[in-house]
Length: 114
Image (cartoon, rainbow, N blue to C red; front, side):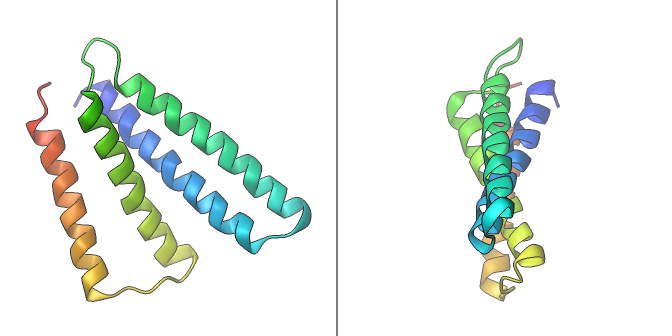
């Protein structure tokens, strides 16, 4: 695994972070709300920068693959955070489709030329 894949995975974590920050901002008021919105701004900036870095360098990840993995990994993490932080429901079908998404992400990483 080259460094660009690591950038992409960390960027996906920050993508989930900005989704989490928006969710927490919706639940908050006053100064706390603004802190969550600031967290959103930091997370979205870092996430985009890491996506940008993953698509460049000595062994760039193609744009289509990079974006799909970045968005998909962020979505997976967002669902997991939602379950543990926002007490979202865990249903069989949610887990089936989440597993399908994870399998697809691993497949994209596997078939992308290094």
